[in-house]
Length: 412
Image (cartoon, rainbow, N blue to C red; front, side):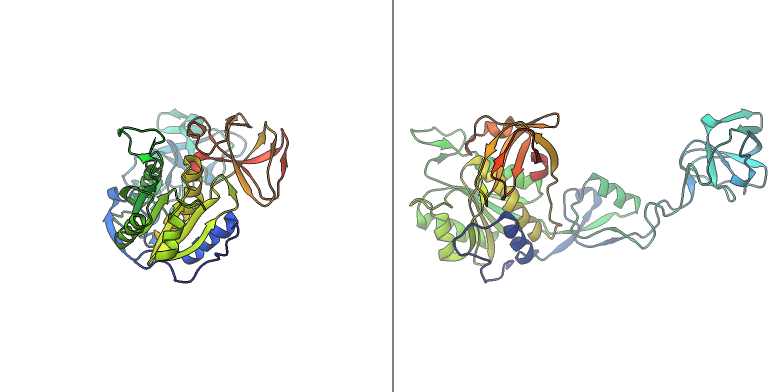
């Protein structure tokens, strides 16, 4: 399962910028091998493994975009109503009876083939029927209300690029092109574990100083959204030998390992040391807040993302580090979260050289900061809409300043 080269990225102990970390991931984490073909109905959420070339054109023939009358544009009067004789009635799925000759029209319905000679369709609301004749108001343009063969997708063109995540719209396009099976990348297996003697699973009795493990549930949900198979390795105690054994076992059976907790510099933070002892540590501190202690490395040839223990920091660093690693391993196009310009309704001071993310709710186009700042505050995630992203060079934010807002939906 070798996905990473053996050389280090840029580990030197300093703080690494977010953009630099993402570039390293894109450059060095290689897709896992394996493309398989699955039924179209099972392709939702998978990563397209090959470019899709259109075997047919969409639409396949010139057709009507509305219910109305197909006519020859040259028969229409520019400044007064035109009267034409209606010679045909064409419904979707049926061939026209004959080509249109000068002075004739055909009743036509949405999706029906245009008869030969017709180059415009008049909406039925703009027409008046009088027996076998139709009276048409002036003012239409040539080609109006028609769909040209191949205007959506031309035959032989690239309909979808490899690396695209298949959603409902993509399945619809593939179905329209006639595909029964789809080439997709092999589904990744991600080993997930939490570290810490203080952690207990939900439902277990808490003793003094202990907490329920929330991070594993947050991260498992995020992983499942990305369509990977989650191998839940549970909680690993703060003991170097136990942690090393757990990481080696996970590396043998997974495409990626994700841990939470234990990546800082405390005496009981053993993840960083275990990575260095049993593989390579590529970086472990980012110039961000929250989430500075985040590790990227490998155990043997299996890449690892070591995320912080605080839930807010774990979610943010998953989006910034773990998600790009997953996308690179899966052969997917890297997702770039969209930012939206809004106005800050709060003042804020920060250090230069560090990118900071402030939890906020939207009130129209104003971003309201969550009143409590701690990275362990789970309600700061459930009661806000996303993050105000403050760039490295900013040191002082004043109310009314335009800022970038990233909705949680764009991150995860």
